[in-house]
Image (cartoon, rainbow, N blue to C red; front, side, top):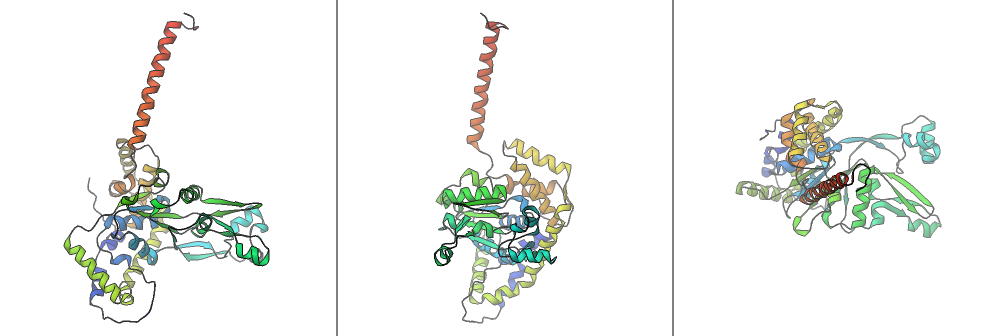
Length: 389
């Protein structure tokens, strides 16, 4: 079945037109160093990659996105381009991450003195803030990831304090791991534990702190450099295989846009600002409406039948498929996900979930169980009901 994308939001993301005007922009060399990133809307092709990333923004319950492909295909550029599209969330306004919920659960001792005073005055501890893109460096250490003792404070003031790690700062944000297949096992285990629980605990001697870590995980990798452990592969909801562009015209257009961006990145970004803001607003609206979106019975049946026919054992397969279908429906301003939505997201949700090893292992155990049962029945018949020959 071939699904036709009808979503206004997804169509806008796949259009190349917003960036065309940039190519004729005046060239002005401002002579400044900056960290301006290539706009998401200026990317050519790669419709599935862009759709997966946007669906992940709309519905964090999808469980993140994994981009798999060779170098130079725009994986990291696409992820960093999401910065201007990131939605708003309610988060703690305190650097320590204090919330009213923490105070209700653990009393005033569970929040810092400043926040305790705010609660006493009836002031809120949270405010609307934009989701951030938190990048995990490849050379990162475990203590950087989970947090640890503040050594400077311990040496200078003889005070022992646990500092937050990257996973804590990733709470309610996007956590991006480039070359995710090259991470150390200890760091992978920490990410897996935090992703599964939404929290993690750090213990250093008598000190113990538990941090929230409700993040959307985005990873990218080059399969030439090694495979990804099945445990962390299973944590990525959508999997996209990114290949090179298919036509010379597309590749030529990429070259032109990259050149225009390098010549005058401020002008390039400015020309796309209005379209980018429009998409960002639509993502915010879609996130707000998502709780009201349901799945049509026919769409649910299709998802379950797909998983069954593909012999996928993980229940995450149908969960991710239906969550992605809901996100696609709400992006199209609909309150019911239908069969077309399931068909559109199924390749991304079900790819790389079938395991021949698991299938063969389970089949071997079934054959073993059959042999045990047949032997047991033959012995019971020979021995009689009381087990005597």
